[in-house]
Image (cartoon, rainbow, N blue to C red; front, top):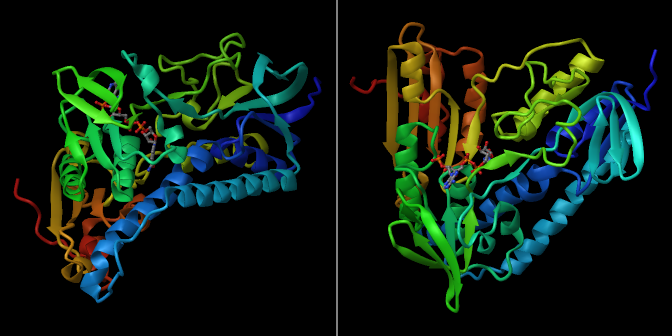
Length: 452
Ligand code: NDP
């Protein structure tokens, strides 16, 4: 029988790769992991974690504004120190990089620094050195995509937003997805004048229509200048800053222009095609339900292959691979009712189907929705409102869609996602006692369906 240097060779030290390497090694496999940058991937270094830290920073602006209603007096306007925030974030991320390294080394994973490339179905090359492995896991993630346009060299992508120097007084955000909305909200909160341009009629394609409209209203109320049905034709640098000219001739000036126009799988320069690995039109690795590529010894998890580009999805996929290769055997992941949050101000939290998707899939549905001013904002004087919506399959009474725009929506929806995975019906929701006074209790007290 052929012998290999390793049982598993993981390319990429992000969420999926680290989880697979660590858990496989803990089960006794001989594992190597190659990473050319810092450990932790997009999530830790330029994604979820620093984004959430900056989102907390932005949230203080609202709290300062609301504090006087609760009796607090602030002596003079609060001042924000961008450099201090950047330095504190960098320190925390470096700490996390170290935690990841410690976890891998503690599990006995061989860490290799460098750019890995496939030489064949069982061989990975890093520099001059070749390593053989029974299984190879590609977990190289994705990277921001910027469309071709005149003046493209003047724009930045989300990776650069954490270390901008100086702080952008005027920020133009292009795109209407997760990343565009989150950065528009964050920099608005931190004090920049933010304009967001989106090519379609409503932000956040794919989310429930009511959620999309409600969020745009709230972001607008908070100060983001949202311009829909708008596309940029050209960007130039002028003395007064960058100038974006829309295809309809509208000029917008900014200090920084962020393109958040989607992400593409990181598959360039990995030798995948030469090794016979099939790629889809986006450049992603085509995998089966067990994450095997067209070459059986090569597997892929996370953003490099999946359509749900979310850290917890990459982690779950990694565990399926480890269980299959070094555990109880093959099983399939169920992606239905994957909850997700958008860390805008206010947050979106969502689980299951939009109303339109539910109508298409289940036929008759009942819809419950509620819009209100949260108790917190009675004294705060903030005009912020909260929106909640349930979509219920008529035939079974099952809650198939749950959507929220409001404070800590991600925290609220995580718990409800468990109930939805368990098949909770509206009757179960109705029989659940609320926690008073909370915003979340509204999900168990909505009684009257919307007409129609
Ligand atoms: P999204 O796919 O969410 O959004 C991309 C946006 O760019 C859309 O509004 C899209 O418009 C627009 N767009 C695409 N191509 C062009 C173009 N050529 N010109 C102008 N606009 C264009 O991608 P993101 O980059 O925001 O995020 C990538 C993924 O990362 C998300 O889908 C999500 O899975 C994940 N993510 C998750 C987060 C979370 O969990 N909180 C946070 C950040 C990212 P249109 O809608 O018309 O196609």
